[in-house]
Amino acid sequence: MNIDGTTMYLLDNGQLLEAYKHFGAHVVKDDKHNIIGVRFTTYAPNARIASVVGDFNQWDTRTHTMEKIDDAGVYSIYIEGLNEWERYKYCFVTNENETIFKSDPYAFFSDYRSETSSKTYDIDGYDWHDQAYMSHRKERDFNKEPMSIYEMHFGSWMRKPDGSFNKYNELVDLLIPYLKANGFTHVEVLPLAEHPLDESWGYQATGYYSATSRFGVPKDLFYLIDRLHQENIGIILDWVPSHISKDAHGLYKFDGSYLYEYSDDSIRENKVWGTVNLDLGKGVARSYLLSNARFWMDYFHIDGFRIDAVSNILYYLGDETKGINSGALDFLKTLSHTVKAYDSSVLLFAEDSSTFANLTKLVQEGGVGFDYKWNMGWMNDTLKYFEKDPVHRKYHHNLINFAMVYHHSERFILALSHDEVVHGKKSLVEKMPGDYWQKFANYRLLIGLQMTHPGKKLIFMGGEFGHMHEWKDTSELDWNLYDYPTHQKANLFFKDMLNVYHNNPCLYELDYSERGFRWIDSNNAEQSIFSFIRYDQSGGFCLVILNMTPVVYHNYRLGVPKRGQYEEILNSDLLKYEGSNTYNGIDPESQNEPVHGFEQSIQIVVAPLAIQIFKLRK
Image 1: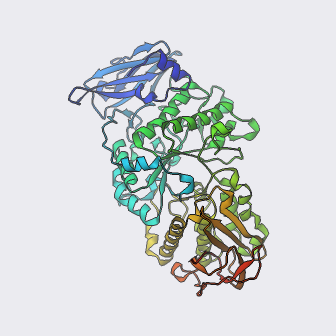
Image 2: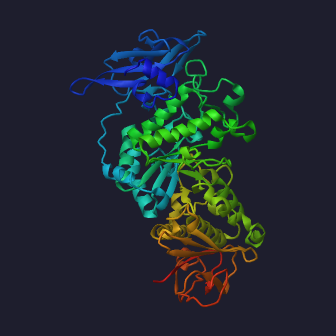
Image 3: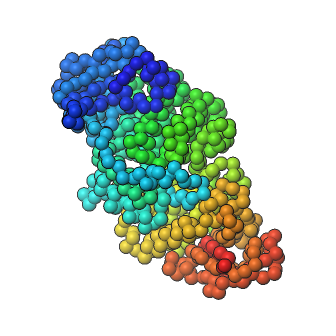
């Protein structure tokens, strides 16, 4: 711990990028690496008196009074004889003579909820084995790779027979084989920062440096990530820099003042979520959050951050009529610069529902510096379309083809996330119209559209096997559905679709290039059929046709860019997926019959409520 004038200057100006090395509870070791005590340091400029309380002093506020080591409000104390796992809090007597007790905002570990204390923890010393993965990560061009992300909530993915949570290290042998079997390249985890309320799903945090104790200790999480990396699976962390929980023990009014938040209650109070907004223009808030991003990269080897509620950052209270929040916008640009300067291979994802331009352009090119943006427009339009009875879809044709009008304005992620299968919105399958057969045919069609449309892919847990009920955060997924053939076949299609996606560069290499996509026919509203071509860098291509109705079309003529024989490499209507088994038994040969702007065309059978993919035989 070294607090000097330079440290405080950097803290106040939002430039202290390793604040966790200066503040918090740090174990002290002797020459034999035995822990002999703990140094506590905190920043509380509105505190008149500060002390550390815990089990070790019977929570007596007078026993361990901290020394004020900097006039700006830094307090510190070394307590000899303490070890790991000591429960503690800070006690402040504020300038207004209010006595408050706070958990440590820089704590590396926290007591199991509903307890609210921090705990001392030795976070150093883990022996990582992911060096090959980390080295290779720096050389990868993710824009030209397939990316299939499994979004999940650790607390409700799979539980023990008694209903308790699996620990981080216990998830290793459950989760990793499942991710590999289904073909996911990344797992995205709902926030793991310590939070008091399960129902917040982690989006209302109290301890940003403390991986939640619900699932074990930080080094168990190290082990899970280490093993994921050894299997070439990346991990993306949901990260919430915009707003915090109002629980009394947390960061809210930390020293009795609005140290990290806005002072103006008209923009501080986020009444919709019951939270308060951090003032991202304040130096101390910036240093806290930028250091936190560095901390997760440094200690946890995180592959990326999904930034939650970006519209709430860009605009005051997320309201575009209130104007752009220039301080918060500058924070996002600084975040990008800070993350990329430390490790350019760490990815930044924006969950943003606004139309703010150039989020995924480089800062030096006038952008904000994200790598990818969730395409909320595609998600909303697509689900709105699929919820309609097929007989009415011809009147809403533009809901599907409109996304390509603006696709090249950003680097988009196509996300079917947790927000779309909760709070009465129904699961993906239950959203679909029709009888049981039609629901699953539509589900396969939706997955097929997502996997062939330009953009990287994300699906929330359960979506890979046609989960029937919407997400329940208080229990595990309905794994018993795998006992039923319909769900087995739904998952088989999902796996096969991802396999086609991964093994055909035309479906990912040029996701963000105008050379990578061409409509064959985007205007066939009467039949509700969409057809397009996806190209790879070498000129190879796939033909994709989607029939959004249960009508079978024989002798359908489809324009093709090259002469030759075409192989149907995927058809979601096959019997093995529980379809009607309408398919092209003989590979169609192109003919000199112009259609759709092409000199050549093929004649095919178009299956009902199905996606079909064709490739030119070599």
